[in-house]
Length: 257
Image 1 (cartoon, rainbow, N blue to C red):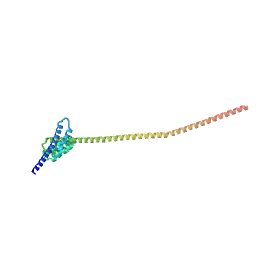
Image 2 (cartoon, one colour):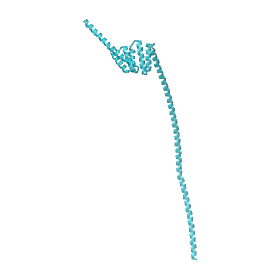
Image 3 (cartoon, helix red, strand yellow):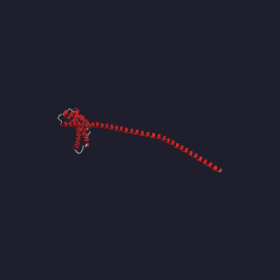
Image 4 (cartoon, rainbow, N blue to C red):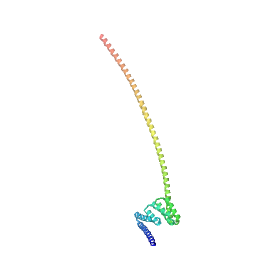
C-alpha cells in the first residue's frame, strides 16, 4: 500500500516538473523572439514581438500570476505599439505585486504607454505613483518632467490658438461691419440713383404732357392764318368781280353808241 502512495506522489511530482518545463519552454522561446527583435536596430520587427507575445501567453495560461512573465508580455505589447493593452497589463502588475520596486517599475512603464497615447494627465499620475514607491528613480523623474513639459506646451499652444481664434473672430466682426457699411453705402447710392431716375422719369412725363398742348397751340395759329388767307381771297375775288362788272358796263355803252 505504501508503494502505491509513493508511486502516485512520484508521478504527481514528475507531472508538475514536466508542466513547469513546458511553461519555461514557452517563455524561453518567447525570449528568443523578443531578443531577436530587439537586436534588429534597423526597424521594429513587430512580427517577432508578436511571436514572443504568443509564447508568453501560452506560459501564462499555465501560470497566470508569474510577475516576470507578465512583465515580458507587457513589454512585447509595448514594442508592438499596442499601448492601450500594455498600459492595462502594467497596471494589472502594479495592482497585484506587493514589491515596491516591481510596482514602481510597472507604474513607470504604464506611464510610458500612456505618454505614447498622448494621455498626459494619466501618464503624469502614473509617474508620480511610481516615485511614491521608489523616490530615487531618476529615469522616472526625467519622464515625469518630460510629460509635464509636454502638457505645459500644449496648454500654451491652446492659449495661443484661443487668442488667435478670438482675433479671427474680431477680424470677422470687422469684416462683417465693413460689409454692412459697404452694403449700406451701396444702398444709399442705389436709392439716390433710383430717386434721380424717378425725377428724370417725371421730367420726361411732364414734357410728354406739355407736347400735346404745344401742338394744340400751333394748330390754332394755323387755323387763324388759314382764316386770314380765306378772308383776303374773298376780298380779292370781290374786287375782281367789281372790275369785271365795270368792264361790262363800259362795253354796253360803247355798243349803244
